[in-house]
Length: 551
Image 1: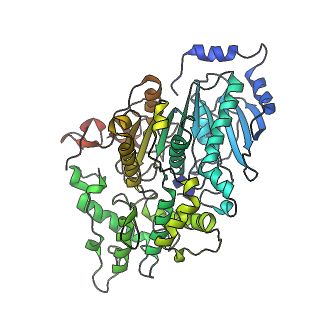
Image 2: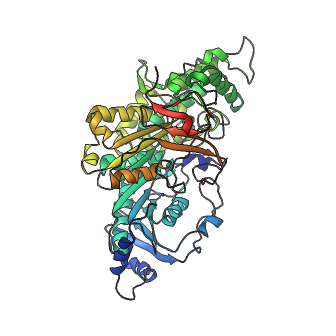
């Protein structure tokens, strides 16, 4: 599995045909959509310029041959309708270079704008999601967030504080502002509603939009948000230290199955079903010491004493020298798999995990600005305050006061896999709790929903049902699609309830519902959970009911 596939997760109901007719009527006689697209090259934009404006006939666009997951896109590009592609270069500061793309269908625009988020350290534009949105009638926009490169490389940030701000929040806001101006000019009318969707760093971007720029979007879908960036990557550094404290501390990938099997043996049936999925892993009180090797033993089926200590640190979260928890740890369950702990947390060798790469890149290139900074020198007591002082204002999206977003009618749906090995699920649970505490339960319920996904890893994957519309290619049924449910909430006032998630034989959120479902499971508005009725096939969602969790 490619590393980039694990960084992303990371939609259309059509409006009445009269809207599209009205928009076409705004064009001057003889001014065909294809002609209008080329003329956009001369559109004046604030602190930005259009570098390309070109019409592509149906099936003629040819972009990057693969997306982030390594999926061959050549056949996908041939399915795209005719559309206008506009490339914008925004320079809000002298050190900014934000590339933005806006794709607009020539026919059948549904009146909506779909903004798309990034993953990791950004640096790429997702042509697959842009194409999927255009194919469903949306005008769509995406950005590289101000730099070009691998999403696990932060070298671009070294010595460029304005680029860090662009990555942190300004890039997405610029993207949104530019896209609305381009859409207005092309169709003769701005979008009737604007939506944003992103997972991981894209989830952080989503919450940043709701907090800093509440007028940008009417509806926001935020998945597994890395919104407490300083806390998350400080813990990445601390966990890497725990796994490399001594030569015996590192937990090799060959031992991950032993951990997973021990967790499952102790906790799998707590929810009444033996299915390899922990309904709520907070209820699992797994003690790593139960699989400690006997004296003198070291085998794949057990952990050494040093490895037990490291695993307890990973479960325990980020703590300072006084024992105070600064950021929640990872929950037990779903440790195995290509998108599990062996890739994200432990890695193929000491210091080679994805989280180690993110932690090292963050502190060396953004916090301390020393390319040769050694992660072994990290100290929680000094590193966390330094990180917050240096970058929190640009990167952290932790403000629980979403009143401005709510007051203008904005709606927010969050989701997070309970067994995310990249971003601990409790970070999102805690943020939602803070929002309720700040605004009150009734106010929060009027515009926020949280869906916790049992058995799901980072944005998708894992043993649980993991597809529910977080990608633009999924079924449009509002009971199975979080994006559609969000639109119904924004445009019809219909608050989302239970959403049915599906696990398919396909790979990742790009899989399409085509009769290949392996299981379905209801996702319940938090804090409700899906409880098995006691009979019927547990692979079918109808045999579960959403209810308050039994204590």
